[in-house]
Length: 134
Image (cartoon, rainbow, N blue to C red; front, side, top):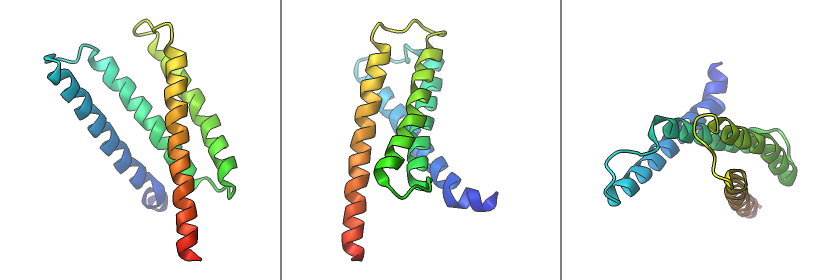
């Protein structure tokens, strides 16, 4: 277990904490800048954010540690695993608060766009590393 912790769980935990903290602070600053002292979305919003960040960190960790050499195949596998988790999170949040009519479209566009952006950055970084090592 210690080997697993040191190889990837520790990194994932640090990334998770950092992203959750930064997104929460940015969200709070946004509300304060608008003169809103309390988060109108309440605690459920915080828990939903925590789950979404967890899925993002899971995607990162899968992409980094999945034993598949072909980068394109690895990206497709990670997306195929994490996108249903994102959609399930939206569906479950509908039991707490009513979803907007475009909730699934919005999350699909936002998650896919961010996923593609991060994947392209990873591809560029991989090519740069290969050129340095060659």
